Image 1 (cartoon, rainbow, N blue to C red):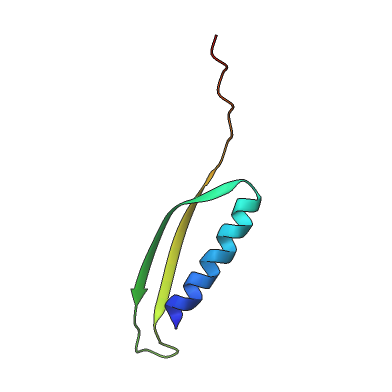
Image 2: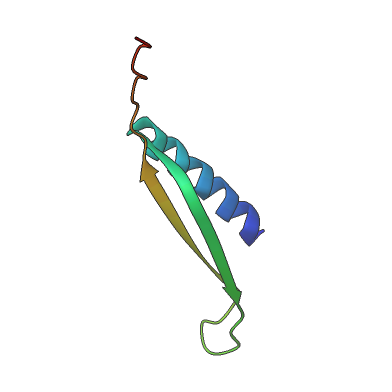
Length: 61
């Protein structure tokens, strides 16, 4: 369940970033469980976006 939520959130973030000229470069996840008060499975995702710059090739001379 939690991974499905993470996947949906990733899609929304990538679409929003793409509309601003960015693309997803790297994603990493870490999961842990906790049995303390308010505990439960935890997933943390780190996403790195890079700016897309379009350059036109120089015409051949």
